[in-house]
Amino acid sequence: MVICHNIPWDKCLSHQIWPAIKKGWTEEGRPVHFFWGLGGNNLKELQEVKDRGEEWWYVDVGYITEQITRYPEPIIHNYDKTYFRIIKGNMHMTGGKPGDGSRHRKLIHQGIDAEFKGWHTGDCEHILLVPSSPTVCFYTHGLSQEQWIKEVGEEIRIYTDRLIRMRNKPRPNNEWWGTDIKDELKDCHCLVTNMSLAAVDAILNKVPVVVHKNNVCFPLSGNIANIEENPMKKSREVVTIWLNCVANNQFTLQEIEDGYACKTLIEQYSDD
Image (cartoon, rainbow, N blue to C red; front, top):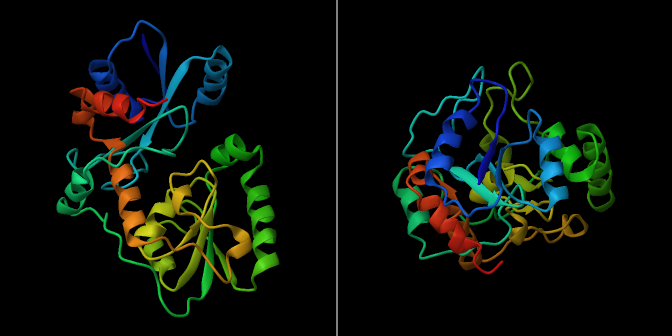
C-alpha cells in the first residue's frame, strides 16, 4: 500500500508528485511511505513510521537538475529537465549503482550543469560554510542551525586561519537572495556543509568538500582535520562514477508516473 504523506499547502510540489508516485509505484501489499521534505507534520509522522519498522522513501528536488522557482510558490519551468530524488530510508543517496553513464550524459546533452570540470589548482582564498535548513540541522544533529554553524566554525578554526565565509539558503529578503553560489565558489579552497546540495555545486565547480556521512557527496568528502593541507580531491574516474550514480537516482515526473523510477530504484536497492 503506497502512502503519500501530504503537506497542508496547496502550492506544494508534492501535490504534483504524489499522483505520479501512486500511478507508477508497484504495490507490494504492505505499507510503503513517501515523504516530501521535512515540512508540515513529516518529522512526527516519519518518526512514527520508523518506530513501526515500515519502509519509507524521501522525495525532494534532484541533485543535478534545472532549477525550479521556489518563491513565492514553486514553479517547474521545464518538466523534461526537472529531476526529483527518491531515496529509500534516508535523505540522500549514499550508495547506488552507476549504470552505463547514459543518464549523466543525457543531463549534459540537455544543457544542465552536470560536467566535472576538474579541481582548482593554485592558491585559493576562503572556506565556504553552508548550513542546511534549521529543520534539517535539527533532524540530523539535534542542533539548531546557529549551534551547528558555531560548532563547525570553531572546529574549522582549529586547523586553518583561512577566511571563513558563511552562505545560508537564499530566501526572500536575506543577504543571499538573488545571488549565485558559483560566484562564492570562485577561488574557494573548500566547502563545508552537513546535508546541503551546495556540495554538489561545489564539486561540479572545482571545489572539494567536507560533508556529513549521510550527504550524497560523502564518497568524495575529506575531513576538517585535513582541510588546510590536503582537502580531498578524488580522481576524475572516481568523480565520474559518482556522477553516474547520482544521475541514476533522480527522475522526471514522467519517469515517476510511467514506472521507470520504481523499476530503476528496485534494481538500485536489490542488494539491500
